[in-house]
Length: 456
Ligand SMILES: Nc1ncnc2c1ncn2[C@@H]1O[C@H](COP(=O)(O)OP(=O)(O)OP(=O)(O)O)[C@@H](O)[C@H]1O
Ligand SMILES: [Mg+2]
Image (cartoon, rainbow, N blue to C red; front, side):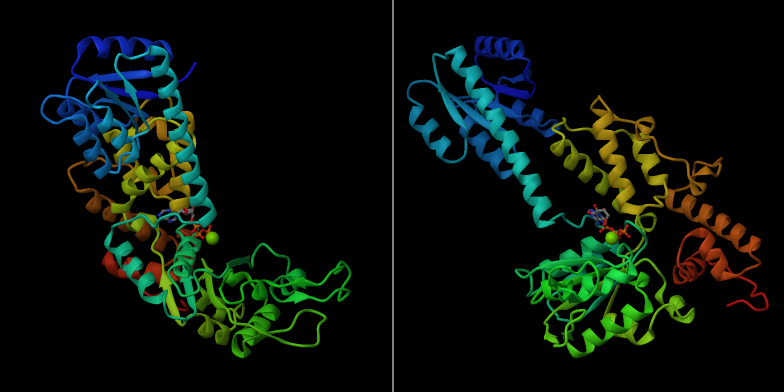
Protein backbone atom coordinates (compact mmCIF):
# COMPACT_ATOMS: atom_id res chain seq x y z
CA UNK A 1 0.00 0.00 0.00
CA UNK A 2 1.36 3.42 -0.89
CA UNK A 3 1.19 6.31 1.50
CA UNK A 4 1.52 10.02 1.00
CA UNK A 5 -0.53 13.17 1.03
CA UNK A 6 -2.11 14.62 -2.07
CA UNK A 7 -3.95 17.88 -2.64
CA UNK A 8 -6.19 18.16 -5.71
CA UNK A 9 -7.25 21.59 -6.93
CA UNK A 10 -9.93 21.69 -9.61
CA UNK A 11 -13.17 23.57 -10.03
CA UNK A 12 -14.93 20.56 -11.53
CA UNK A 13 -16.61 18.70 -8.73
CA UNK A 14 -16.74 15.35 -10.56
CA UNK A 15 -13.00 15.40 -11.31
CA UNK A 16 -12.28 16.03 -7.63
CA UNK A 17 -14.52 13.15 -6.63
CA UNK A 18 -13.18 10.63 -9.11
CA UNK A 19 -9.50 11.50 -8.54
CA UNK A 20 -9.93 11.45 -4.79
CA UNK A 21 -11.61 8.06 -5.09
CA UNK A 22 -8.89 6.31 -7.06
CA UNK A 23 -6.02 7.88 -5.14
CA UNK A 24 -7.57 6.93 -1.80
CA UNK A 25 -7.95 3.40 -3.11
CA UNK A 26 -4.20 3.48 -3.72
CA UNK A 27 -3.68 4.38 -0.05
CA UNK A 28 -3.03 8.13 -0.30
CA UNK A 29 -4.51 10.70 2.03
CA UNK A 30 -6.32 13.15 -0.19
CA UNK A 31 -7.65 16.68 0.28
CA UNK A 32 -9.44 18.75 -2.34
CA UNK A 33 -10.02 22.43 -3.11
CA UNK A 34 -12.32 24.00 -5.68
CA UNK A 35 -10.19 27.12 -6.25
CA UNK A 36 -6.68 28.48 -5.75
CA UNK A 37 -7.58 30.64 -2.76
CA UNK A 38 -8.93 27.66 -0.81
CA UNK A 39 -5.87 25.65 -1.84
CA UNK A 40 -3.54 28.31 -0.44
CA UNK A 41 -5.38 28.24 2.88
CA UNK A 42 -4.98 24.48 3.08
CA UNK A 43 -1.30 24.74 2.09
CA UNK A 44 -0.77 27.25 4.87
CA UNK A 45 -1.69 24.61 7.41
CA UNK A 46 -0.39 21.42 5.87
CA UNK A 47 2.35 19.97 3.75
CA UNK A 48 1.67 17.51 0.96
CA UNK A 49 3.78 15.28 -1.20
CA UNK A 50 2.00 16.03 -4.45
CA UNK A 51 -0.38 18.76 -5.60
CA UNK A 52 -2.55 18.10 -8.65
CA UNK A 53 -3.49 21.40 -10.18
CA UNK A 54 -5.95 22.32 -12.88
CA UNK A 55 -4.55 25.05 -15.11
CA UNK A 56 -7.86 26.78 -15.58
CA UNK A 57 -9.41 27.91 -12.28
CA UNK A 58 -11.73 30.82 -11.48
CA UNK A 59 -9.93 34.00 -10.22
CA UNK A 60 -6.34 32.97 -9.60
CA UNK A 61 -5.44 30.27 -12.10
CA UNK A 62 -3.31 27.18 -11.59
CA UNK A 63 -0.17 28.72 -13.04
CA UNK A 64 -0.38 31.68 -10.67
CA UNK A 65 -0.89 29.32 -7.77
CA UNK A 66 2.17 27.38 -8.92
CA UNK A 67 4.22 30.62 -8.99
CA UNK A 68 3.05 31.48 -5.49
CA UNK A 69 4.01 28.04 -4.23
CA UNK A 70 7.44 28.40 -5.79
CA UNK A 71 7.92 31.81 -4.19
CA UNK A 72 7.07 30.25 -0.84
CA UNK A 73 9.76 27.64 -1.55
CA UNK A 74 7.24 24.85 -1.10
CA UNK A 75 8.47 21.36 -1.65
CA UNK A 76 5.41 19.61 -3.08
CA UNK A 77 5.71 18.12 -6.53
CA UNK A 78 3.10 19.67 -8.83
CA UNK A 79 1.19 17.85 -11.57
CA UNK A 80 -0.93 19.98 -13.87
CA UNK A 81 -4.20 18.97 -15.43
CA UNK A 82 -4.76 20.59 -18.80
CA UNK A 83 -7.68 20.68 -21.21
CA UNK A 84 -7.26 21.41 -24.87
CA UNK A 85 -6.07 24.92 -25.35
CA UNK A 86 -3.87 24.84 -22.28
CA UNK A 87 -1.37 22.17 -23.27
CA UNK A 88 1.20 24.78 -24.34
CA UNK A 89 0.99 26.33 -20.88
CA UNK A 90 1.28 22.96 -19.21
CA UNK A 91 4.44 22.18 -21.13
CA UNK A 92 5.93 25.52 -20.15
CA UNK A 93 5.04 24.96 -16.50
CA UNK A 94 6.79 21.60 -16.61
CA UNK A 95 9.87 23.34 -17.89
CA UNK A 96 9.63 25.72 -14.95
CA UNK A 97 9.73 22.92 -12.42
CA UNK A 98 6.32 21.25 -12.35
CA UNK A 99 6.71 17.48 -12.28
CA UNK A 100 4.44 16.62 -15.22
CA UNK A 101 1.01 17.26 -16.68
CA UNK A 102 -2.02 15.14 -17.44
CA UNK A 103 -4.30 15.79 -20.38
CA UNK A 104 -8.05 15.77 -20.22
CA UNK A 105 -9.88 13.49 -20.55
CA UNK A 106 -7.93 11.91 -17.73
CA UNK A 107 -6.76 8.35 -17.93
CA UNK A 108 -7.05 7.12 -14.37
CA UNK A 109 -4.25 4.67 -14.90
CA UNK A 110 -1.95 7.47 -16.03
CA UNK A 111 -2.96 9.54 -13.00
CA UNK A 112 -1.94 6.76 -10.63
CA UNK A 113 1.42 6.21 -12.32
CA UNK A 114 2.26 9.91 -12.54
CA UNK A 115 1.36 10.56 -8.89
CA UNK A 116 3.44 7.61 -7.80
CA UNK A 117 6.43 8.84 -9.81
CA UNK A 118 6.05 12.35 -8.41
CA UNK A 119 5.99 10.95 -4.91
CA UNK A 120 9.17 8.96 -5.57
CA UNK A 121 10.86 12.02 -6.97
CA UNK A 122 10.04 13.99 -3.86
CA UNK A 123 11.44 11.27 -1.63
CA UNK A 124 14.64 11.19 -3.66
CA UNK A 125 15.13 14.91 -3.36
CA UNK A 126 14.56 14.79 0.38
CA UNK A 127 17.01 11.98 0.80
CA UNK A 128 19.62 13.75 -1.22
CA UNK A 129 19.18 16.92 0.74
CA UNK A 130 19.76 15.11 4.01
CA UNK A 131 22.77 13.25 2.66
CA UNK A 132 24.48 16.32 1.31
CA UNK A 133 23.80 18.15 4.56
CA UNK A 134 25.40 15.35 6.50
CA UNK A 135 28.37 15.13 4.18
CA UNK A 136 29.09 18.81 4.16
CA UNK A 137 28.40 18.97 7.88
CA UNK A 138 26.31 21.90 6.85
CA UNK A 139 23.80 22.00 9.65
CA UNK A 140 22.66 25.51 10.29
CA UNK A 141 23.27 27.21 13.58
CA UNK A 142 19.75 27.79 14.81
CA UNK A 143 18.87 30.48 17.33
CA UNK A 144 17.71 34.09 17.42
CA UNK A 145 18.18 34.84 21.10
CA UNK A 146 20.41 37.83 21.86
CA UNK A 147 23.11 35.46 23.08
CA UNK A 148 23.02 33.49 19.85
CA UNK A 149 23.00 36.62 17.72
CA UNK A 150 26.13 37.71 19.53
CA UNK A 151 27.69 34.30 18.99
CA UNK A 152 26.91 34.39 15.27
CA UNK A 153 28.49 37.80 15.05
CA UNK A 154 31.62 36.53 16.76
CA UNK A 155 31.77 33.67 14.29
CA UNK A 156 31.42 35.93 11.27
CA UNK A 157 34.05 38.30 12.57
CA UNK A 158 36.59 35.70 13.57
CA UNK A 159 36.19 33.28 10.67
CA UNK A 160 38.02 35.21 7.92
CA UNK A 161 40.92 36.06 10.22
CA UNK A 162 43.62 33.47 10.62
CA UNK A 163 43.48 33.76 14.41
CA UNK A 164 43.34 30.64 16.55
CA UNK A 165 40.04 30.17 18.30
CA UNK A 166 39.30 28.60 21.66
CA UNK A 167 35.70 27.58 22.16
CA UNK A 168 34.20 27.06 25.60
CA UNK A 169 30.87 25.44 26.27
CA UNK A 170 29.11 22.74 28.25
CA UNK A 171 28.48 19.34 26.69
CA UNK A 172 26.26 19.45 23.65
CA UNK A 173 26.14 23.24 23.29
CA UNK A 174 27.45 23.12 19.74
CA UNK A 175 31.23 23.56 20.01
CA UNK A 176 31.96 21.34 17.06
CA UNK A 177 29.23 22.99 15.02
CA UNK A 178 30.73 26.41 15.70
CA UNK A 179 34.21 25.17 14.79
CA UNK A 180 32.93 23.82 11.47
CA UNK A 181 31.07 27.03 10.76
CA UNK A 182 34.21 29.07 11.35
CA UNK A 183 36.09 26.83 8.95
CA UNK A 184 33.33 27.07 6.35
CA UNK A 185 33.34 30.85 6.50
CA UNK A 186 37.13 31.09 6.39
CA UNK A 187 39.56 31.35 3.50
CA UNK A 188 40.41 27.73 4.16
CA UNK A 189 36.89 26.49 3.43
CA UNK A 190 37.97 24.38 0.47
CA UNK A 191 40.84 22.79 2.34
CA UNK A 192 40.25 20.00 4.88
CA UNK A 193 38.67 20.35 8.30
CA UNK A 194 40.29 17.68 10.44
CA UNK A 195 39.12 16.76 13.89
CA UNK A 196 41.03 15.18 16.76
CA UNK A 197 39.29 14.21 19.94
CA UNK A 198 42.06 14.55 22.49
CA UNK A 199 40.04 12.79 25.19
CA UNK A 200 39.26 9.70 23.12
CA UNK A 201 42.81 8.81 22.10
CA UNK A 202 45.05 6.97 24.58
CA UNK A 203 48.00 9.11 25.59
CA UNK A 204 50.57 6.70 24.09
CA UNK A 205 48.95 7.11 20.71
CA UNK A 206 48.07 10.75 20.61
CA UNK A 207 51.46 11.95 19.41
CA UNK A 208 51.44 9.58 16.48
CA UNK A 209 47.88 10.60 15.82
CA UNK A 210 48.74 14.30 15.78
CA UNK A 211 52.19 14.27 14.21
CA UNK A 212 52.28 10.95 12.39
CA UNK A 213 55.00 8.33 12.67
CA UNK A 214 57.71 6.59 10.72
CA UNK A 215 57.52 2.94 9.95
CA UNK A 216 59.13 0.89 12.73
CA UNK A 217 59.29 3.75 15.23
CA UNK A 218 57.37 1.66 17.76
CA UNK A 219 55.73 -1.76 17.93
CA UNK A 220 52.70 -1.61 15.74
CA UNK A 221 54.04 1.15 13.50
CA UNK A 222 54.06 -1.05 10.42
CA UNK A 223 53.64 1.72 7.89
CA UNK A 224 54.47 5.38 7.73
CA UNK A 225 51.51 7.33 8.94
CA UNK A 226 50.50 10.91 8.33
CA UNK A 227 49.42 12.81 11.41
CA UNK A 228 46.37 15.01 11.70
CA UNK A 229 48.44 18.18 11.54
CA UNK A 230 49.68 17.15 8.12
CA UNK A 231 46.24 15.99 6.97
CA UNK A 232 44.90 19.42 7.93
CA UNK A 233 47.66 21.21 6.04
CA UNK A 234 46.25 24.29 4.35
CA UNK A 235 43.04 23.85 6.32
CA UNK A 236 41.80 23.74 9.89
CA UNK A 237 42.66 21.37 12.71
CA UNK A 238 39.98 21.03 15.37
CA UNK A 239 41.45 19.99 18.72
CA UNK A 240 38.37 18.81 20.57
CA UNK A 241 38.43 18.35 24.36
CA UNK A 242 41.80 20.03 24.43
CA UNK A 243 41.61 20.18 28.23
CA UNK A 244 42.15 16.42 28.35
CA UNK A 245 45.52 16.43 26.63
CA UNK A 246 48.47 15.20 28.69
CA UNK A 247 51.15 17.71 29.70
CA UNK A 248 53.72 15.99 27.50
CA UNK A 249 51.52 16.25 24.44
CA UNK A 250 50.68 19.84 25.33
CA UNK A 251 54.39 20.68 25.17
CA UNK A 252 54.67 19.18 21.71
CA UNK A 253 51.54 20.89 20.43
CA UNK A 254 52.84 24.17 21.78
CA UNK A 255 56.07 23.67 19.86
CA UNK A 256 54.20 22.82 16.68
CA UNK A 257 52.17 26.01 17.01
CA UNK A 258 55.18 28.18 17.72
CA UNK A 259 57.42 26.81 15.01
CA UNK A 260 54.77 25.90 12.44
CA UNK A 261 56.56 22.62 11.94
CA UNK A 262 55.97 19.07 13.10
CA UNK A 263 58.19 16.06 13.59
CA UNK A 264 56.67 12.64 13.06
CA UNK A 265 57.33 10.12 15.81
CA UNK A 266 60.55 8.28 14.95
CA UNK A 267 61.39 10.75 12.21
CA UNK A 268 64.36 13.04 12.19
CA UNK A 269 63.33 15.79 9.80
CA UNK A 270 60.71 18.38 10.58
CA UNK A 271 57.89 19.21 8.20
CA UNK A 272 56.60 22.72 7.58
CA UNK A 273 52.87 23.06 8.12
CA UNK A 274 50.22 25.71 7.58
CA UNK A 275 47.32 24.89 9.85
CA UNK A 276 44.76 27.00 11.63
CA UNK A 277 43.95 25.48 15.00
CA UNK A 278 40.53 25.73 16.60
CA UNK A 279 40.34 24.16 20.04
CA UNK A 280 37.35 23.37 22.22
CA UNK A 281 36.80 22.36 25.80
CA UNK A 282 34.09 22.07 28.41
CA UNK A 283 36.63 22.49 31.19
CA UNK A 284 37.45 25.69 32.96
CA UNK A 285 41.03 25.89 31.69
CA UNK A 286 41.97 28.65 34.11
CA UNK A 287 41.29 26.39 37.05
CA UNK A 288 43.06 23.52 35.23
CA UNK A 289 46.06 25.81 34.93
CA UNK A 290 45.91 26.52 38.66
CA UNK A 291 45.79 22.81 39.38
CA UNK A 292 48.81 22.29 37.15
CA UNK A 293 46.92 20.25 34.56
CA UNK A 294 47.14 22.70 31.72
CA UNK A 295 50.01 24.81 30.41
CA UNK A 296 49.41 28.50 30.69
CA UNK A 297 51.57 29.30 27.64
CA UNK A 298 49.58 26.90 25.48
CA UNK A 299 46.36 28.39 26.80
CA UNK A 300 47.33 31.86 25.63
CA UNK A 301 48.51 30.52 22.27
CA UNK A 302 45.16 28.85 21.69
CA UNK A 303 42.86 31.61 22.78
CA UNK A 304 43.76 34.40 20.41
CA UNK A 305 40.01 34.58 19.90
CA UNK A 306 37.79 33.24 22.64
CA UNK A 307 34.24 32.14 22.02
CA UNK A 308 31.95 31.00 24.78
CA UNK A 309 28.72 29.19 23.90
CA UNK A 310 25.98 29.73 26.45
CA UNK A 311 24.07 26.69 27.74
CA UNK A 312 20.63 26.15 26.27
CA UNK A 313 18.80 26.96 29.50
CA UNK A 314 20.14 30.51 29.27
CA UNK A 315 18.60 31.09 25.87
CA UNK A 316 15.01 30.05 26.28
CA UNK A 317 13.98 31.93 23.15
CA UNK A 318 15.82 29.35 21.07
CA UNK A 319 14.23 26.23 22.54
CA UNK A 320 11.04 26.01 20.47
CA UNK A 321 12.85 27.23 17.37
CA UNK A 322 15.43 24.47 17.72
CA UNK A 323 12.83 21.86 18.55
CA UNK A 324 10.68 22.71 15.52
CA UNK A 325 13.78 22.68 13.35
CA UNK A 326 14.74 19.21 14.50
CA UNK A 327 11.14 17.91 14.28
CA UNK A 328 11.16 18.87 10.60
CA UNK A 329 14.66 17.54 10.12
CA UNK A 330 13.86 14.11 11.54
CA UNK A 331 10.42 13.99 9.93
CA UNK A 332 12.26 14.34 6.63
CA UNK A 333 14.91 11.84 7.56
CA UNK A 334 12.42 9.18 8.70
CA UNK A 335 9.82 10.14 6.11
CA UNK A 336 7.16 10.94 8.65
CA UNK A 337 4.50 13.62 8.36
CA UNK A 338 4.88 17.05 9.88
CA UNK A 339 4.18 17.18 13.60
CA UNK A 340 3.27 20.18 15.71
CA UNK A 341 3.65 20.94 19.42
CA UNK A 342 0.61 21.77 21.51
CA UNK A 343 0.76 24.28 24.33
CA UNK A 344 1.48 21.73 27.06
CA UNK A 345 4.45 20.41 25.10
CA UNK A 346 5.81 23.90 24.49
CA UNK A 347 5.50 24.77 28.17
CA UNK A 348 7.23 21.56 29.20
CA UNK A 349 10.07 22.14 26.75
CA UNK A 350 10.53 25.69 27.97
CA UNK A 351 10.63 24.56 31.58
CA UNK A 352 13.08 21.78 31.06
CA UNK A 353 16.71 22.42 32.01
CA UNK A 354 18.62 20.44 29.32
CA UNK A 355 21.66 19.18 31.18
CA UNK A 356 22.79 17.77 27.81
CA UNK A 357 21.99 21.04 26.00
CA UNK A 358 21.18 21.03 22.28
CA UNK A 359 22.29 17.43 21.79
CA UNK A 360 19.71 16.35 24.36
CA UNK A 361 16.98 18.47 22.76
CA UNK A 362 17.83 16.96 19.40
CA UNK A 363 17.55 13.44 20.82
CA UNK A 364 14.15 14.23 22.31
CA UNK A 365 12.93 15.47 18.91
CA UNK A 366 14.26 12.38 17.16
CA UNK A 367 12.63 10.05 19.66
CA UNK A 368 9.27 11.81 19.32
CA UNK A 369 9.37 11.56 15.53
CA UNK A 370 10.15 7.85 15.69
CA UNK A 371 7.80 6.87 18.50
CA UNK A 372 4.81 9.19 18.27
CA UNK A 373 2.05 8.33 15.82
CA UNK A 374 -0.24 11.36 15.75
CA UNK A 375 0.32 14.79 14.25
CA UNK A 376 0.07 16.73 17.49
CA UNK A 377 2.64 16.32 20.25
CA UNK A 378 1.74 16.99 23.84
CA UNK A 379 3.75 17.06 27.01
CA UNK A 380 3.39 13.34 27.77
CA UNK A 381 4.77 12.37 24.37
CA UNK A 382 8.06 14.11 25.11
CA UNK A 383 8.98 11.77 27.97
CA UNK A 384 11.16 14.41 29.60
CA UNK A 385 13.35 13.16 32.41
CA UNK A 386 12.58 14.92 35.64
CA UNK A 387 15.81 16.64 36.65
CA UNK A 388 16.63 18.26 39.94
CA UNK A 389 16.08 21.65 38.47
CA UNK A 390 12.65 20.63 37.24
CA UNK A 391 11.55 18.84 40.34
CA UNK A 392 10.74 21.96 42.31
CA UNK A 393 7.11 22.62 43.05
CA UNK A 394 5.51 25.67 41.53
CA UNK A 395 2.41 26.90 43.25
CA UNK A 396 2.17 30.32 41.78
CA UNK A 397 1.42 30.36 38.07
CA UNK A 398 0.98 34.07 37.56
CA UNK A 399 4.60 34.92 36.92
CA UNK A 400 6.25 35.13 33.53
CA UNK A 401 8.42 32.18 32.68
CA UNK A 402 11.53 34.27 33.04
CA UNK A 403 10.55 35.42 36.54
CA UNK A 404 9.67 31.89 37.57
CA UNK A 405 12.90 30.52 36.24
CA UNK A 406 14.94 33.18 37.95
CA UNK A 407 13.18 32.62 41.22
CA UNK A 408 13.78 28.93 40.98
CA UNK A 409 17.44 29.36 40.06
CA UNK A 410 17.88 31.82 42.90
CA UNK A 411 16.41 29.45 45.46
CA UNK A 412 18.25 26.46 44.14
CA UNK A 413 21.65 28.13 43.90
CA UNK A 414 21.21 29.67 47.37
CA UNK A 415 20.50 26.22 48.81
CA UNK A 416 23.55 24.62 47.26
CA UNK A 417 25.72 27.59 48.26
CA UNK A 418 24.46 27.30 51.82
CA UNK A 419 25.17 23.59 51.87
CA UNK A 420 28.74 24.29 50.79
CA UNK A 421 29.21 27.19 53.20
CA UNK A 422 29.41 29.66 50.36
CA UNK A 423 32.32 27.94 48.59
CA UNK A 424 32.17 28.79 44.93
CA UNK A 425 34.23 25.97 43.42
CA UNK A 426 32.34 23.29 45.25
CA UNK A 427 28.98 24.84 44.49
CA UNK A 428 29.84 25.21 40.82
CA UNK A 429 30.99 21.60 40.74
CA UNK A 430 27.77 20.37 42.27
CA UNK A 431 25.65 22.47 39.97
CA UNK A 432 27.63 21.16 37.03
CA UNK A 433 28.56 24.61 35.79
CA UNK A 434 31.81 26.48 35.50
CA UNK A 435 32.92 28.88 38.17
CA UNK A 436 32.91 31.83 35.84
CA UNK A 437 29.39 30.95 34.93
CA UNK A 438 28.36 30.73 38.58
CA UNK A 439 29.84 34.16 39.28
CA UNK A 440 27.84 35.57 36.41
CA UNK A 441 24.69 33.90 37.72
CA UNK A 442 25.23 35.25 41.23
CA UNK A 443 25.52 38.77 39.99
CA UNK A 444 22.60 38.52 37.57
CA UNK A 445 20.39 37.00 40.27
CA UNK A 446 21.72 39.55 42.75
CA UNK A 447 22.83 36.91 45.22
CA UNK A 448 25.34 38.16 47.76
CA UNK A 449 27.46 35.52 49.40
CA UNK A 450 29.30 35.61 52.66
CA UNK A 451 32.87 34.61 51.91
CA UNK A 452 33.97 31.87 54.29
CA UNK A 453 37.56 31.63 55.44
CA UNK A 454 39.82 29.80 53.09
CA UNK A 455 37.57 29.95 50.05
CA UNK A 456 39.22 30.06 46.65
N1 LIG B 1 22.52 26.19 17.57
C1 LIG B 1 22.36 24.96 17.06
N2 LIG B 1 21.55 24.78 15.99
C2 LIG B 1 21.36 23.57 15.46
N3 LIG B 1 21.93 22.47 15.92
C3 LIG B 1 22.74 22.55 16.99
C4 LIG B 1 23.01 23.81 17.61
N4 LIG B 1 23.85 23.61 18.63
C5 LIG B 1 24.10 22.29 18.66
N5 LIG B 1 23.45 21.63 17.67
C6 LIG B 1 23.46 20.18 17.41
O1 LIG B 1 23.58 19.52 18.66
C7 LIG B 1 24.48 18.44 18.56
C8 LIG B 1 25.64 18.66 19.52
O2 LIG B 1 26.46 19.70 19.03
P1 LIG B 1 28.05 19.60 19.05
O3 LIG B 1 28.50 18.21 18.80
O4 LIG B 1 28.59 20.66 18.18
O5 LIG B 1 28.27 19.96 20.57
P2 LIG B 1 29.58 19.93 21.45
O6 LIG B 1 29.57 21.17 22.25
O7 LIG B 1 30.77 19.68 20.58
O8 LIG B 1 29.28 18.70 22.40
P3 LIG B 1 30.31 17.82 23.29
O9 LIG B 1 30.82 18.72 24.36
O10 LIG B 1 29.44 16.75 23.83
O11 LIG B 1 31.37 17.36 22.35
C9 LIG B 1 24.93 18.37 17.13
O12 LIG B 1 24.16 17.44 16.46
C10 LIG B 1 24.68 19.77 16.60
O13 LIG B 1 24.43 19.75 15.24
MG1 LIG C 1 32.05 18.05 20.65
